[in-house]
Image 1 (cartoon, rainbow, N blue to C red):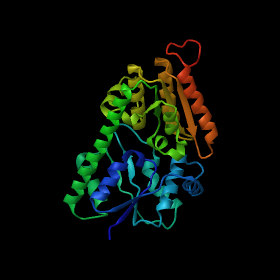
Image 2: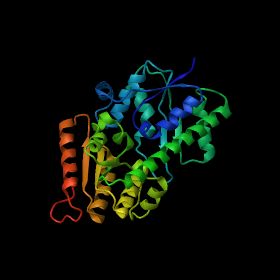
Image 3: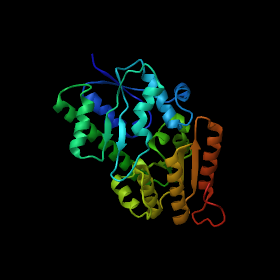
Image 4: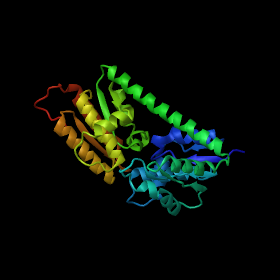
Length: 318
């Protein structure tokens, strides 16, 4: 019988899902991803995590609990670094301990450290370490990793191509920014992206901009960038301002997220200083009401539809 590997549908799953799922499936494991976020998962996560945790971390707890009796292992890697000289939120390196001490009677946890800053040899060692939970065949493990990485790159390429298609459209375009787990968890953001699209607007996300473009444009920012997440959003912002092909920006943030408070303010400051693109910050937590979110989205979209490109009298910032 195949080993069952559980992957919580939360946090960095929304960035690396193809990479992780393909890797374990190529090794012969039965991958079980937790269900889409729902009220039960949110409630269980909130009840079993510390009050100070942000909503994405609370949701992660809920997703882990939903896998509890279904798998042999739960994949909760210890993410330490993504880019040299830049930091990520410390919750990613402490997540395995947070889960172990908050939730009881869990299956075994795969908590191998992942650090993309280290050499390729160290990365290969990490891949081998994770793969051995399923098989001891080193060649099979490396083949699975190569296949997973290739699929991951193809996914990113398809997103880049989607952006090119959107650019050819005459419909108004809104850039929706934020951590991937804030953008792509429909329950958490109350289907914000779907609601924008339903109004006849195109949606662009930072994942649609290729990494080379983001890296080159982030260098135009004169300040020091400490967070890997910040580099991506600042690079995207600088690129959009230069191209002047976006009609509005919505930044989706988690209440209590320190990184969001810094990065969001930086992005807003750049937009206000360098352009007249309308900007709105949408901050969410477990108490956010859908009616209030809908009202703000509808008002922002209406303003964009009514606003002339050369507005002089109406504020462009919500």
